[in-house]
Length: 437
Image (cartoon, rainbow, N blue to C red):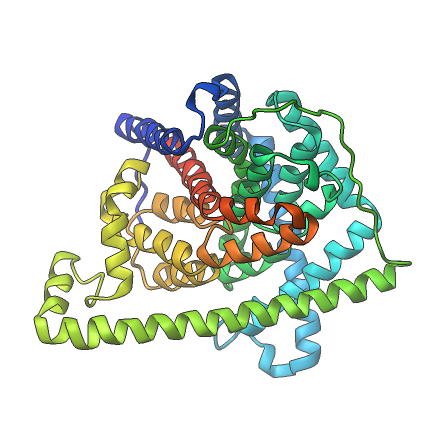
């Protein structure tokens, strides 16, 4: 049975230490430490802490996120109606959840709905409102930056910049870096349903639980992205606070918007399914070498099983990543018994992608590998972002099309934006873990 840690002073102290370490890493990577706006940093951290406290302990805020999560779950249910029509008895969950059928198919419906809501102008209004809130609290970011950061909470990392595509060619290095970090540190609404379906499975309570935390993780990532991006690349030019959503729907009517979104969802589903197939097969290949050959003939498999109490069966890439990331997981406040497990998930997310990591998390959760509920919650936040090696190419390619004259600058920012995006997720996990009881 999974345990509850409860709130204690050590949890708070480790969280504060973790925040200091994350900010310290950003400070070390900073291109101009004297120009760091510490007032902006303090405002962003304060906003994140307030968000976390409100989500966990303010009833009406928690209910709002739960209700929003239930909306996503309801949409997943509508998706399964379509799947049942196409597949009949093969769509049943009685024999368990089939990831391709019960989770990935939601990408198609969610993509179609986002396209329709964008055509009607709903997405733009929500993004503009959230952008206004961010700029009111976090002084020093431009209107274009506020829009793209807010847009990344709801759209993908290549779709959100389209809202300010006319501003991107005029952006300096600091502003471009913030655009990239906000894309790396958040997730798209189109993939939210797949994550919820994957982690929640057949359990309605689990679905609501993960929907609530996935939504809050994406929202909390916005101020964190601004803080860390501005620390690593402080603003050096003038801040233009005036900007509006410049992208209007390119579709003539709602039916065309639905059709376009559906086609995009199909491409996304096929792309995700193909990446999962290849990456999970690649992990199996690497594990054959490490566990099946090296671990078997050197006795490392038995040693790993002993030191982990049987949680790791051998000298696998998951164990190696977990061991490497364990010191960082201690600093972030992950319970000691789960440090290797959670560290492995973060390593898989960074090296491969978040879908692989969430899939592994779901398997380990069902197998009872996690000791504490807090570790499950923190993992949900740690993995909630697009910061991985493959995303560098996708982001650089997408932004270079909008600003070809800045291609070399964008490419040069790619690796650091992945580091900053990873720190965004870590910072959100630290704050939520620090106050989670």
